[in-house]
Each structure stands twice: as structure tokens, then as C-alpha cells.
Image (tube, rainbow, N blue to C red):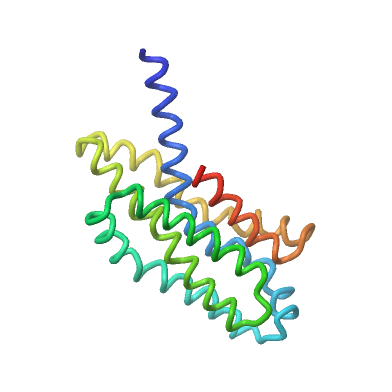
Length: 180
């Protein structure tokens, strides 16, 4: 049925876009909460900026290993494990009581987030021809590109009304929705 195929395709595109943008969303959503976070963890701004740097480093370096692991063990298991790591690390970030703990869990969260980026791209390459994949990338990646821009806006509202911990809890909920 063409109508069912179209619904499936749209749902598939939404999931792929969410998977691909989860890492970038998590990188920037807590930026508006940094002053409150620095105060809560009794740390300096420069130490807090390390949480962003370590996250981006973890996101970049782990993509090499995630791609390799998904080729060996399969896309699904690596993706599900990545989502679980992402969710648990986000929750741990929200309960961090020190800057050192936050830095560690941000790095772990980035490893989980890279599964969405890598497996999302690999899934497109696996299931579609080069021409179809190009069209899909043209749909998905503008959404992915805008996610770091809207993340601080979302994070600003969340942290204003619910506190800095809620930004990480939001990211965990985002991951749970993807996991389901």
C-alpha cells in the first residue's frame, strides 16, 4: 500500500533525524545553565567548559569504534547499547555533585550519542541506493544542522523553569523515546 509506505518512510525519516541529532542536542542544551551549574558544583567557568570539550572529543573519537563495532556485531545491538549508555550517562550527569564526575559522565554520554550518528548514517547506506541516500541526507541533515542552534534555546527554558539538572533529564527522556 502506497499510503502505508509513505507513513513508514516519514516515521523512518523522523527517527533517523532524531538519532542523528541526539548527540548535537546533548552537546549544547545545558549551555544556558552553565552559570547555575558552576555555582552548584563550586567550580570555575574554565573547568565547566571542559565538560563541553570532553563531550565533543568523546563524540568524535568514539565514532571510529562505533562504526567498527556496528560492522562486526550488527547495527541494532550497537545502537540499542549506545542509547542505553546515552540515557544512563545523562541521568548520571543530572546527579553529578562534582565537576570531575560531570566530566566523566559527559565523556561516557558522548560515546553513547555517537551510536546514533554512526548507525543512522550506516543504516541509510545499507538500505538505499546512492541516489536515494543522497535525497535522504538532503532531508535529514538540515534538521541535524539546526539542532545545535535550537538546543540552547530549549535548554534555556528548561533550566530557567526546572533547574540545570532538568537539561540532562530532558536529554535522557529524548534517548528513552528513541530507545522505545
